[in-house]
Amino acid sequence: MTVPIFITSGDMLADRRYALARDYAADGDLAAAADLYAQATELAPGFASAWFALGEAREALGDRVGARAAFEKAKDSDPQDRHGAALHLARLTGADPPTEALHAYVRTLFDQYAPRFDRALTDLSYAAPALLRDAVTRHGTRFGAMLDLGCGTGLAGAAFRPHVDWLSGVDLSPKMVEEARRKGLYDKLAVGDIAQYLSEQDAGAFHLVVAADVFAYVGDVVAICAAAAGVLADGGLLAFTVETHDGEGAVVGPKMRYAHSESFIHNAIADADLSLVELTRASSRTENRVPVPGLLVVARR
Image (cartoon, rainbow, N blue to C red; front, side):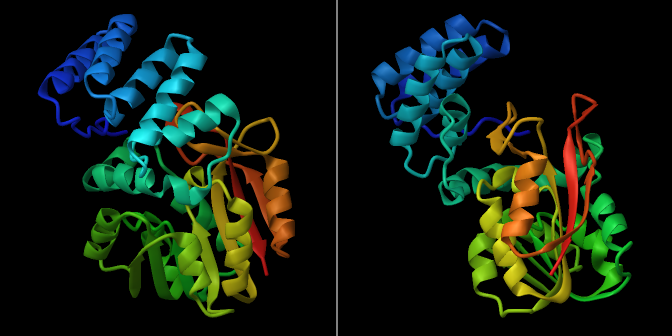
């Protein structure tokens, strides 16, 4: 998706070891890369980028114990966890980091990604906004106020703008919001955490709340669904897409994105006191030209 995040160690020799290791990794020599990353961390014990890359290399080499130790060091070396070590630890240990712990990683990731986001998603056959629009408009063709959670550059806003009177959007990434603002689609845009933003809205303020592929970066979907229900007017709709898997609960997949089981989503909707209107299998994007398994969900207050 992006160029790997690099945070200098402040030690020129350690940074050079890291750069050389990345070259070896790019050539497929992960053993040599891991050795050089380890050397870099010996020279600079607080070198978060080298620890993180070492964790990735060790995991690819099958050394799960060593990978876990390296990711722990990466997280300790950068308390903001801009590399996303917590997500890798979730895969390796089954731990479930709070969504707030992922904010710096998600913000950094999408701030990097913002200038080429729309073009890149075209290459991934991204269809979430169109899928959601088509599903929602089967249950109503016109809505008063809509909230676009994790609005990004405004792709969902563009799909829904003809069907709503007032369009608000919120996203954690300032640069993504800048891109959305340039399109002139939204009546109101905000930068912030979606859970916090929902808590600040009036009860019943929206007739439609949409989250297009946002929950791939949210662990506590149950809490978000409940918060969204609180801002919906009676009869209002919550519509979202998620990636899914055939097991139980929420898991972090190989692309460091959450996937949620069908039963998990059923329970999240029930816990939010919403009525499930539609839950269908639908892929909103591809990876290596293969559709990513997903669910499309519409629920009513």
